[in-house]
Amino acid sequence: MRTLRPIQRYDRAAIRQALDLLPRPGGGTAIGEALREARPDLYRAGVFRKYLLVVTDGDNTSGRDPESVAREIFSKSQGAVQVYFVAFDTTPQKFAF
Image (cartoon, rainbow, N blue to C red; front, side, top):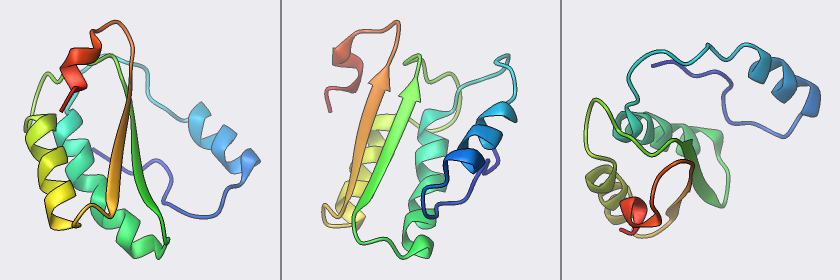
């Protein structure tokens, strides 16, 4: 797992460049682990509103369960961190938690 771009002010050109550097799909999908790694970055960034947006095909194939991690994040942050999912090729019930 690696950070493609740290959380910072929006910069369209930098975002486009970061997207061009995304690796091609071809490995496991560790949604829970990605959530766990991303949460501290929100606090280091010093942003007031804290949101995690997960874009996925919906299949967590390795690592911790996304539901348990999302619930842990919500609990530890007392609701300050909100997690949203955009999932393709799956049912909405997969992220109903």
